[in-house]
Image (tube, rainbow, N blue to C red; front, side, top):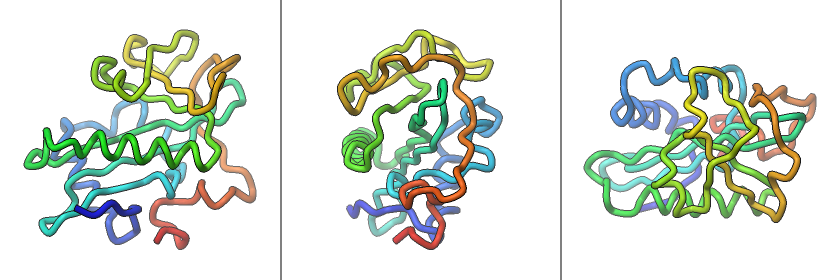
Length: 177
């Protein structure tokens, strides 16, 4: 099994994995509205590949809350033939470590607390995803001490600055290797 950064050549294979693992209409969820027209964080878009193809994948997207940059984790998926092999955990640990190394302070996701608690995520009050998100599923992880201190408000789409740092370019841009 190889751990790789997603490239342009992987895009449709990863999308096919997400289609296989998630219900039809996944793109109608509020998280997808925050991703539309925004490049994912290339260096955190990872996949695990074996001889049969993409076994698991994870993506991250920048969003803002109260003027603060935040990573929105997701989607993450593991091919049904590879579930219960620890691949999702491998992607979570590796991508969160890389996010911290890149200088990100906080990560947000919408998911099941019993699963994501093992990675340090916990419920977060005072942060509001676009409806119809269940507030009990809004989970957060501080990558640095105090990473969520004073960060409250609505989660909004990221406005790309004129000259984004390299870690904010598209997963399928020219800097992806």
